[in-house]
Image 1: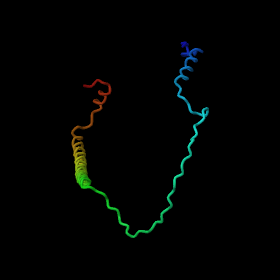
Image 2: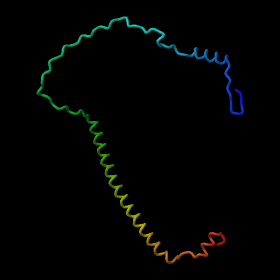
Image 3: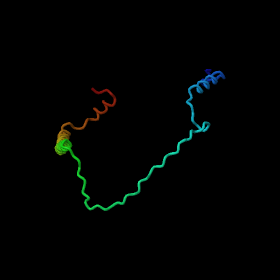
Image 4: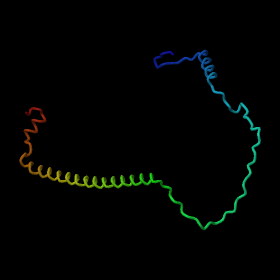
Length: 140
């Protein structure tokens, strides 16, 4: 590596290239590309005997399939349904609480607005001398 004014310059030697090519040849996996022939199957596949299609007959005694539920599954289903109803009830309660809190916030805003209206005449507007003193930094 040479350090130049415009940056670094890397110099590659012939021995370095030969060394890296030898390493690549050493670790390269054996390829099965186009240069090597593919093995051919030597045995002939036996033909499978195909069953002749059976005549299908229409059945009149078709019945709907019963759902296979074990006593354990029905117990779990009942438990999950109970949890679902409980959670649905909690959502209703939370919605009611959110509505009440929103109403309290609205009332608070009205009270603060009324308080500001009442205090404005008492506080009055700041005098011009007071504003000038604040801007110039000479005030108390």
